[in-house]
Length: 145
Image 1 (cartoon, helix red, strand yellow):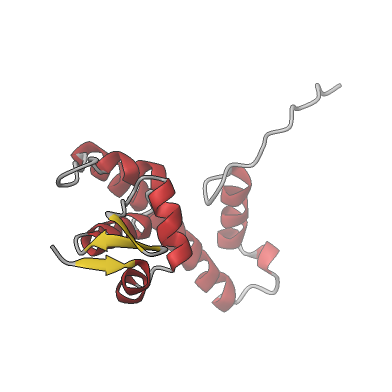
Image 2: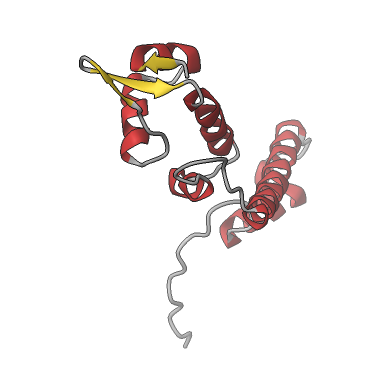
């Protein structure tokens, strides 16, 4: 089996050595020993790093990615987790698309003021309600006299 030292893994994968050490701490990857002071890895670590990069690009946390890796053998990728992440991405895409369309409208709107534009005012209301991003904390309403 081909052994790669940490510098070679970093160079081939584009992942800094400090991140490789962190991934090893999180048990996402495992070194197979040392040559002098340098960690050694089996060549298969490059595939594992590619899967980690794919998971991160899809928005999975390192803890979620760790659940997909068995200590030995192939990854155990939970299809329900993948479907749930795809749904989450769909929701994000819809929100971002609405925001993009609203910004384009606001940039080209012929109204004298954005606050006079019904479309822009709908966008402002949607943002205030949390529909376009992170929900804001609601403050309790005081009773009206």
